[in-house]
Length: 478
Image (cartoon, rainbow, N blue to C red; front, side):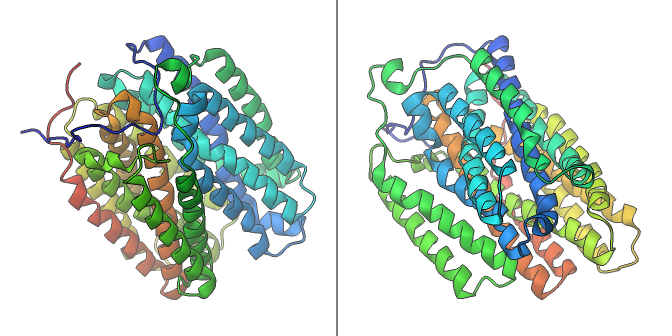
């Protein structure tokens, strides 16, 4: 039995054209992976380190926590605003130049953040970092997908996911150590040597790719101005409203609800525009592909529950158990290792196993781990090892779901649609992670840890429905 893919009778032009396809080679893929992994490590480490440092920054900058939290929010909003332009940028100036631009912006933002003299300046410079960070993931993912043999796409995606293993394990520990033995500025200065290395490797190792106008007889994609005026600000406003509502524990306050509503209206306007224009900023016609759509829905539900729950552990260990930030980070290390190991195994397995067999099993394992945590956390005397073990089970499920589902979504897409697919998957993850975080933060504030974890377990369980609609056949050979 096979799962049919729905393809439009006359495929529309994608928002970004790729260079003419040539058989991928292992050397090209290995060089691309080395560059992408180096850049991603810098980005993931930065996010985890800054999250650990927020309370320390309140003292160093003589600013309230509500203000300092904008250093994280500004990064997220800038990232959301620039992600939709990734496919257009790759079509206009090429993937290599787009990636070099992203690395340069992120490294420059890190240097400026280390030189910040106030909370306001740090917030502004974090936004510069976010502009670079918003391009790193979709452009890097697209370059890996283009360079990989489709039969080994899972392996390539597994290797590109290595920063997910390194970041959550090393970031909190490194951040805590830097804050203990050095100045807060070092949490940004540590990015500079990694950024310089990534820029050098990208310049030397990435294969030059011409923009669309030079790669073929096609005209390079025009900038979709109506799309630019609706989708990026719509995403930024929606994420701002969700983030603010989550921080306040109330999504209905005007300060949170009005921006979220305005963002939703702008996104709806973009959807209507994108379905009627030839070269939209983001090609929503990808959703005509059944496997891509089912994968996106599976990821949306799973990401909401899993990433939404990630704030609960550190808060619990510090507020309920009275542990230090560094200790809380160390208790999260086994979970990060489990996620990374499961991801490496499952992302390789998806090259040989039907997605309908592997991914629902991962969803079920993750939901079970979340449910066990919800049951146990109601008892304040429960041994710490049991909570960590439940979280590791949850992490094993996450590692089995996330990268294999992305691989399944993109494996059979034409090469010239990979840029749009990578951008869409990045937006999907960002949007639903923020939505889940806002929902679970609100539940934590109003009802407590057991209910928050129960809601996360329910979201993971709901992801079983679309996961069971994924292809039941093995990936095709050749």
